[in-house]
Image (cartoon, rainbow, N blue to C red; front, side, top):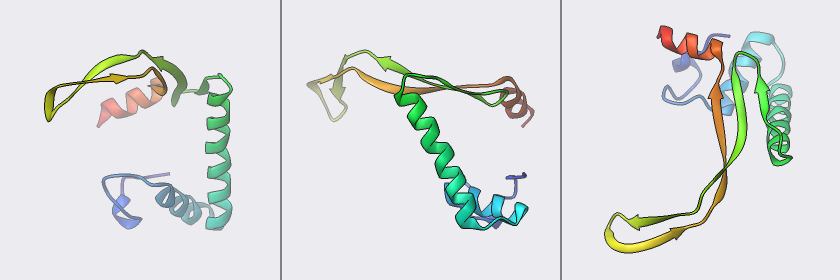
Length: 107
């Protein structure tokens, strides 16, 4: 799958789910509705695993995991004298795999 020619399928600054569905459908001959369904199920599975406290690992692509961000104090950039308490929260962290790092380094 070659996403280097993004001009053909949409926005050249971001790859959207719609772009991905269109590209896969063109390359495989599978209907866009079926491709969309599979992609959505995969994304839902990733979310469910993360919600369940698991990390999601795709060999050579990368690892998604949930980490806890500590509570902290922030400031309003427009009014620096205003102090805002930012509560602790969970965030998703992504660590790229070896193959992804190598491919990005080639660019």
